[in-house]
Structure formats: structure tokens, C-alpha cells
Length: 292
Image 1 (cartoon, rainbow, N blue to C red):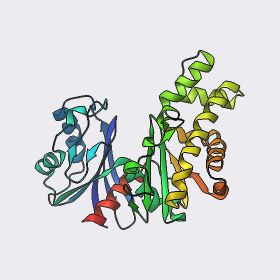
Image 2: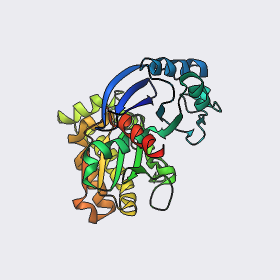
Image 3: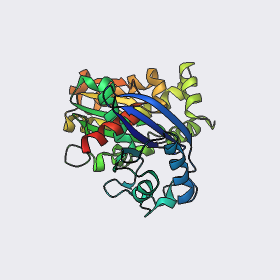
Image 4: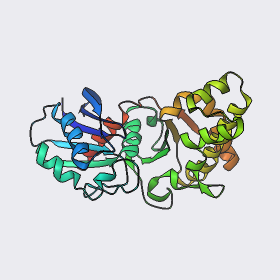
């Protein structure tokens, strides 16, 4: 058994885990709150506290999945007016981890890319060499994966491999498909201010306004995504994130939008993710092993 330590840093939590790189299973995991709005010292103290719970000897390769904007090569935060982790702007996170954990190396990967790589390694991504993974939650995240490696540059992916940079109807797609956009659309249609889960429940109960709001959002996503599915020659599109629990409502509208943008996508393999919890951990470990 070969174990590789991983840190997954999220907007509200940090997870530390040991991943068996022979079987790509998580054999130990610890999770805690992260003070994302705190000082740099507070944020990094939360990260180090979780990491030390793994009791990893010095000299290990550590993998770190972290949200952007972040300089992955140099290990420096680029957050500014993001709303979370702003105090890490310009902070050399790699230097802190090296000082506190004494690793042989620290390999960073964007959290959405880690999710995509992990899904390729573990789950439904096995069905194709080129996979697009979309996460639906507060915003829209994406990863373009070619045979287990994230693609972030070139004419076949959006800027930085981020679908949220893509325009739809003259605005970024997140103005139509995101938690805030769906809530605002429902409020405009009904005068009711409620969260996405309740809107989904209303749609399942036959609420016409709720169903129309979700249809607009997810058909727009499919339409915006269709060009990039073709450019990237994607074999599979995976949908994850908190909204993916409403796959029964997402799938018909998403497929209609994809086909509206590109009729040839009628037979495209589009599925919800299977390994949402552990995929980022495994993806980060897989990427770190490939880089070491």
C-alpha cells in the first residue's frame, strides 16, 4: 500500500486524507471548518491543524486541491475581492506548508480540476478519454480532462478551462445558472424568496413557475456548453455539485439546451457524478503522483 497525503481546501471546510495510490481509495480522512473570511494565519492554521491529524512523516509528497484564483505553479494566493480567502492574496502558501509539514514537495491543483481528474480515475469518466465535469452550486465550476490530465489552455477549452467565463445572452453564464441567479429568477416570477432546494421541490410538486425557472437555467447551461463539447470532442459530460441532487429536473433541460446548440449532441453521454465526495481527494493524489 502506497499512501499519499492530500489536502482539499473548500470555501467552508478543509479535508485532510490519505489516499492509497495502488487502489485509489481513501483510507483515512479528517474534516473541519475553515475560517475562509479570517486572516491568512487563521486560514492556514485551520489547514495545518487538519494536516497534522494525519500524522504523516516528513519527506512525503503532499497534494493540495484549492479553489482559484491561485498560482498553482508557485503556490501563491491570487484572491482579491473574491469574498473568501482574500487575506491569502500574495501569500506563499507553499512556503507555509513546507515549513510546517516538511514535505519533499507540494503539488497544487485547482479544486474543480481535482474533481474532474478524480471522476476520470474512479467513476463514470472511464467511459471516455475526454471528459467535461461541471459542478453546480454557488456558481458553475468546470474541468476539461484529457486522459486524466486537466486542460486549461488552447482553442478547445474556454479561458483557463473555466465555463463560467462563457457568455450566454450577452452575460456570463453564471448570471443565468447559479444559486443567486435561480433564486433571483424565481423571486421575479413569484415574489417568493427561497432557496434552490425549495424551488426544486416546488417544481416536482407541479409548480409551473418553479419548473420554468429551472428549465431556463439548465437549458441555458446546455446551450452555452454545447460549443465546447464539440470543440473539446468530449466523450462524456459529468454533472456534480449540490444541485446535481436534482438530476431528475436538470437532465431534460440540459439535454434540450445541448441539442439546441448542436443537434449532433443528441446521443452525447451526459450523467451525474458517482464519486462526488472522494473524487477531489483522489484526483489531487493522482495529479501529484503524475507530477512527482
